[in-house]
Image (cartoon, rainbow, N blue to C red; front, top):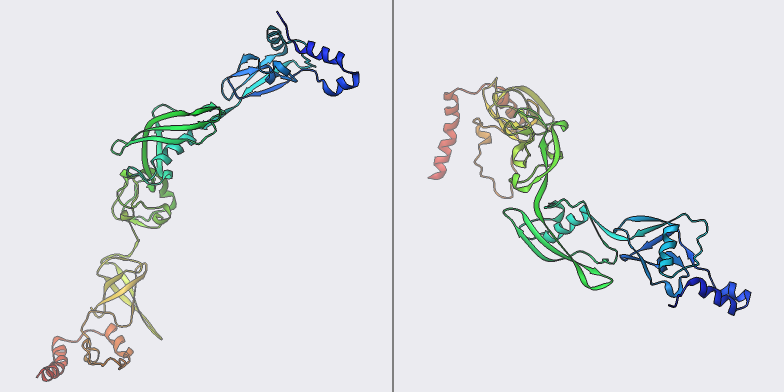
Length: 377
């Protein structure tokens, strides 16, 4: 039997060449301290530098994908001798570490791939809002390093009622013309980010920052538009709600600064005039709402805008009580004519003075009625 060894090859070449040439062209086979492999076997060329024609001889099974194994130098030399490889330089090495490279697909990578395959299909929305759960807990998946391609979905099934999915993927393989196939099953549910109550809240309470937190909930649980945390803080609820309840935009309202039958301050404002008086709210309202109030002195019903807690502002002559003939709603102004200036003094009297008696009101209205009849004729 012919024994081909690296040591014999080196010796023969050294004899055939001058000493200087041997130093330049012949390198001794040397054991490596650290080895990295991509295949499932370790070969002589992986373990030894300058292995020559023996480089392709397999000597070990590779460690598991993505792991590192350790061998003592004695073990390595023993296996090499069994493969007719001797004369390897080891220096002061005590052990050799062998690492098998792998492509690692983390659980998050697989969830993203499934969500992307379902995105905007089967009635689902954006991939970022799809929550994926696999049937078998998938912490991570390790593939041979030659699987360098992207995860490509080739078959996708989804049941919108149950949320079940069954998706097959293919990955291009550098060492094999046939792609690597993967298949995953599980559930995929579309979620929304929504404000959730941290405690029971009564209708009259204002929502504080500590009362609301953000959570992702299944979209089916939130009918209507979900309320954000920023939009909820400082608002009131339309009805009492319990802790853990997701908030919708329809559930929250601006806080009522004026409550029905509440004593309020009426502010009458025109250019150059600012007057306050006591009133009573006829209806409730939030800031900016138009509400009716009664002047407790004149018993007149006025309409104003809620501008603060217990505060209603009236600008100009906004009210529902009868007006003097000078400000009758009917008008005979032509298109190009300017309206008559507002009688501020009359408006102020209308706000603070007691209403006229029925007889006075009738008497004031008779001339105007007669004038209207004459025009009709």
